[in-house]
Image (cartoon, rainbow over all chains, first blue to last red; front, top):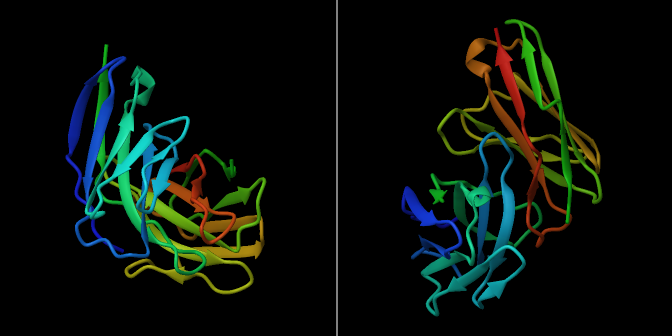
Amino acid sequence: DAKTTQPPSMDCAEGRAANLPCNHSTISGNEYVYWYRQIHSQGPQYIIHGLKNNETNEMASLIITEDRKSSTLILPHATLRDTAVYYCIVRAIAEYGNKLVFGAGTILRVKS
Amino acid sequence: GAVVSQHPSWVICKSGTSVKIECRSLDFQATTMFWYRQFPKQSLMLMATSNEGSKATYEQGVEKDKFLINHASLTLSTLTVTSAHPEDSSFYICSGGSSYNSPLHFGNGTRLTVT
C-alpha cells in the first residue's frame, strides 16, 4: 500500500472548518483514500473514503486532487468532540480482505 | 453501519496466564478480520489477519504460538494471548468488513494489563 504523509498536529477553533491534508504521491490507480479517526482509548472510527471524486457524508467531506496525489479531509464545523488522531490511509480493494496499514496520523486539537 | 463488538474492554491478568479476547461482527458476516495492537502514544500495528475456517496470517515479528487466533464462524474471531508477560500489556483492537469493497469497522479495543 502507498505511503501517506500527514502533519503531526493541527489546531482548530471550535465552530470553524478543520482542513486536514494528506499526501499520497505514489498512490496507484486501484487504491482508495480512507480516513479514520481515533479518540483516546477507543477503536478507530471510519469517516469517509474515495477514489477520485470528491465525497461528502454526514461527518465530513473528502477532496481529492485531480492527479490523486493528495487529499484534504474537511470537518465543516469542528466541535470539541472532534479532537482526535486522524489517519489518512490508502488501500487497494483488488481482493477480499485487504488490510489497513496505519501511519502516525494527525493529532487534531479543537479549542474553544 | 457495520458494528464490531469486542469483549472484554479491559482485563488484568497475572504473568504466565492466558487471556482470550473476542471480536464479533454484530450485523454482518466477516470472512476476514484483522487484529491490531497499539502501545501508548503509538499508532496501530497490524498483528494478524484472521480467516474464517483457515489459519491466520501473521505479520512479520508476531509470534503465532503466543498470539493464537481462531476464526470459527463468520461472526466471531478470538485472540488468545498465551503465557502473558508484562511486555504484552497493550491495547488490542479488531476490525472487519462486510465485503471486500466496504470500509473496515473497528471494535472498541481491549486494554490488557499483565502484572
